[in-house]
Image 1 (cartoon, rainbow, N blue to C red):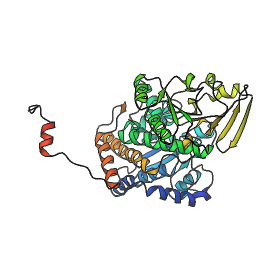
Image 2: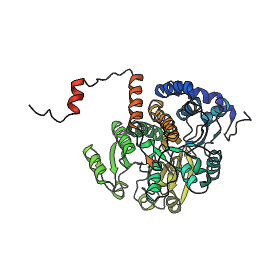
Image 3: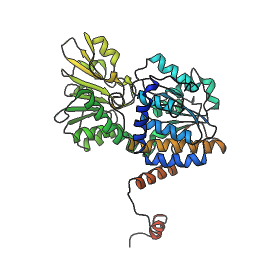
Length: 425
């Protein structure tokens, strides 16, 4: 193990981690098929890759797949509280993959780990929130010229990268994996929907039935959380800044109102926006005693925790695992889950493996596609969508893995769809 550079909590956790990773692999058949093919074809042979992702059992299976394809891959955590320490250990001990991730690592360690994977000089990168790519555009920009492409996994990251592109400062080609239908329609909606509720229940032992749950942001993640909360009997309120999404939430049967109004009614508040201070300091004083506040968007900035700490007369840490109690001057307590970090990964285990199967299959195939394009003239420096062919392949493989068959267009139907001469008769 000494030959594998790493920074993990405890190598002795590797056996338990291997069990966890192998269990997840059973529910990731699409990625398994891709790994099997890549093992034979080696499409990433000799390529140095650096990944900044949540270090979970599902991510470990993606790392195994990339290594099977010939990549020299290293991994660091994209969130200080999402790391599964036993998974990090097995990646180092059993899979010989350099891994830099410790659950609860401080900010300095987090950025040291980012430096570790970037200073390997990657040709391909994978990111979850664009922290890695941001460093490639700032402090570690000297490594950017050799990066052929980067894959971005999250809405937050894509927003940041499109801002870079709009400013004319994007230095490397990026593939917006998050925007793929095989990612956001399933991972964001069904994965975030289930895992967020799971995290809240594990942290609080809460009964959702009868509670008023405020969902802040009605993108794909917000849609998923709102539908799952409603399915458990909660009264769901949605806050939005986009009129179309607000209208959609209304027609989906949810109450829509500004956050200042929702703050007075909610029992549970969940941010899912990718933006900062969606719950601002001024909103905490409006909340009920015992209100639960958490984030399942991306960064903890979605909640103004600095403002909350300033206004609190007392902070009781870890009143329950992953629960901090902020006592306000009016005597009300605000319970913040997982320090405002991703509650589904910090208080639970993140998305189910069957959902991540599609997202990570798309990641693996996007990496292969990026290398093919790079070897065939290169990719334009911009934010690229995922190839429709990759989307179709992942969806077809997933259906096959689920034992589901679908119809095919007949020759006559294909002709009708491609012509304009046949109309109403």
